[in-house]
Length: 156
Image (tube, rainbow, N blue to C red):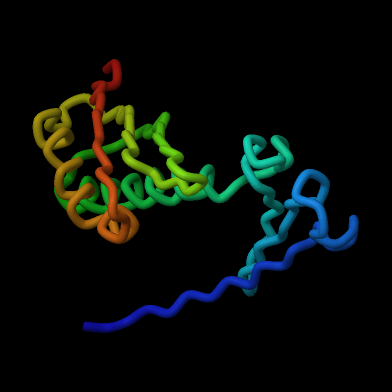
């Protein structure tokens, strides 16, 4: 089976504001760099003294799960001739903290898919199971990722 390699370079940009010498005051800001792509500014979650205006790793995990499901779903829909004309998701995640350590315990995807009039709505719904099973990111996490899709047929 072919392997795909990915690389990311993470730089703690908060160092410019001073060292991480005091938990209460050091900057949590960072920059994620991936060759050939725009840099992404991030920070810790505000619960951990991060900047609420920047992306945090928890946000990015939700985005990774949601976008992977979407891209896998769209591929299957196109292959099965289900014409998707709009797709959006309002993903939610639960992170539980115990003894100063946390982990995600569940993510729920809420994809709303609009299909062209005449497309097979039952098949459009069923394809979410295929996407869920084959999404690289959801296959890689150790917590449940559920999906609760809504399929809407476009007006004719």
